[in-house]
Amino acid sequence: MTAHFDASSAALAAEFALVLSDMGHAPAPAPTPEQVAQLLAYVDMMGRWGKTYNLTAVRDPADMLRLHLLDSLVVRAPLWRHLQGQPGALLDVGSGGGLPGVVLAITMPQLEVTCVDAVAKKTAFVRQVAAELRLPNLRAEHARVETLKAKPWQVITSRAFASLVDFVNLTQDLLAPDGVWMAMKGKHPADEMAALPDHVEVFHVEQLQVPKLDAERCLVWMRKRA
Image 1 (cartoon, rainbow, N blue to C red):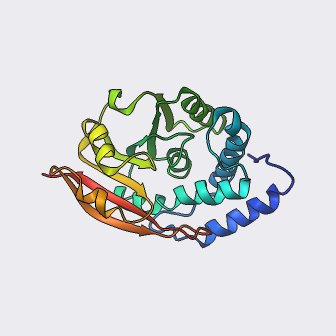
Image 2 (cartoon, helix red, strand yellow; image 1 turned 135 degrees about the vertical axis):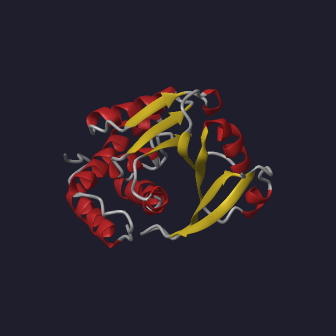
């Protein structure tokens, strides 16, 4: 499987593979060569579909790799640690073009990933990704998350979707009894955490370092209080 974005893509792909090899993946195994090829093909599809489907304002392939793929890949190791490498079900809320859901579906094939978004074109794109990249563990739902009816998920995540309060209020009925919220944030969201309802507990805030990106990133892990 080969990505098709212009003649410089071979050098870009080699650089991306090198960055991946230097990333800390433990306790997860490093992505396989096939998974790396799928990630590059996904970026290629974002580039080809992006303008028509309004997937992202980022157009340059190098920026897409840095701002989208690497930014999503850094949550893979913490998620693997939480699930202890076991199969699980994850809901990606406000997924847009599939970030981080598609990236996690590619690199964690034991994970059943559902991407939900209110924009039909974006869910159509994720379905096309699942078909072209042969990802049987990836599905997309065109719906507002508050109307979604399904079996509760073990992990519910979001990337720049909403405030923590809105995120948990909109999804609390979709979370399994022993499930967790994994919110991707930039700077430490102290004010948002302070505004959370009493029945939600923040049990860990994890600082992340995205390669090639000089910006603050963190994961806010939450669960329902017992």
